[in-house]
Length: 129
Length: 406
Image (cartoon, rainbow over all chains, first blue to last red):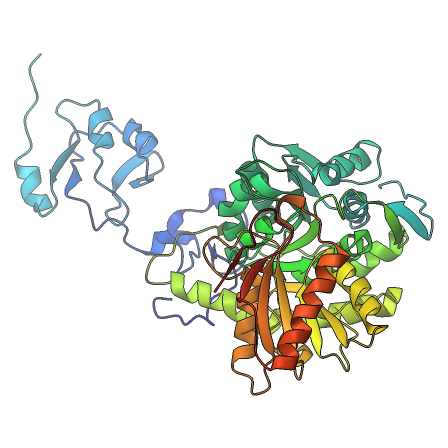
């Protein structure tokens, strides 16, 4: 699509979400959907993120708060279990960290270039009240 | 099912009622409107037909003309047959959304009852609002009478809704002179009218849940140019043949002939007035009167303003000695809008006529037969001299010292 000429587009400022017809899309997991190349799911729209959330599964209680509050559907969860973060779509807003209720938090913001394995070793310990 | 309405073969309708009847007969699904003088009776008429059971559809009352066209865009993207009407200040507020509708390739029909633009505030007819949306990417058809306002609505739906076209259409009619002047209008019965346009066929409609689409997307420097280029290409190559085909089909059905450029007494003409709207009919009366005196006068009426009939204008004016282009809008520091278009169509021709422009009729000022007689005599003088003897832009019908420029 990147190099389409003027005559290669369908008419109208219109993009298709999927290749071909779809049914029961609400009950189809994202990885099983036939997203079209013009759907933003197939592209990285996160290249201006400067801080990223890192997920530490050791402290997560699968409350799903991050999944519910994420404004960009970038928390990946399956069967009500937290799996990780979709770094192609996360903008780094930090809302998931803000709403995480565990102690210490299961999600923390690190600078974009931080190594994730190293970040996990630097995780703070439980905060005494 | 909507109730059918019995119509006489000829009804006495004004342009507004004629347009409203056409919207009923094609069974428009959605009208979103914010009424404004002098176009109000068009949407009011549709609302009454709806309330009385003569049309199955929906009338959406909105808070502005910007919202009216926005509602139309949503309804059209959802997959409905959509129309509305407006004038003047309302159109000015609507302009932003006109570009959206055209770029999104939604086949909306907009009846514009042409009216002056403030200030000073004025409800009467001129063409300032017509030219306001000339670059918006809409097809523009011009009615000269209530009959035209009625017929061109059917023609516009058929052109715009074609899946090869999918470009919205404006039907212009002169404020009050057409919109509020009752004349005989030859009608189509409900079935014939509907069948000429046919059932609406959706395309990429948002209510097709098996094929989800995003309408009105953003495209920056990487794709915007390609979309605009495609839109212009379709306007330049596909629309005019479709208009000519639809005019021919309409003539076969009704006997009423429309042409992209309406030539009157042009076969052996030496002098020609080019104008649009109700002035075309006035000019025809004067040209006929002058023919009786041996003056070879003709009239060219602009029926299709967008896409601009470049080739047809050049052909119609080929071999004419002197042409006057009449512009009914304040030119704002330039030659008249129509003058510029006609001049560009003629400039590269070997056999181009002498051309001069006139500004007239602003805010509903009458264009009289006497004005036109004087104008043709100036053209005769130009033709005899072999050059334009007057300034290229003159004002006619305005009080005070004579105004002329260029």
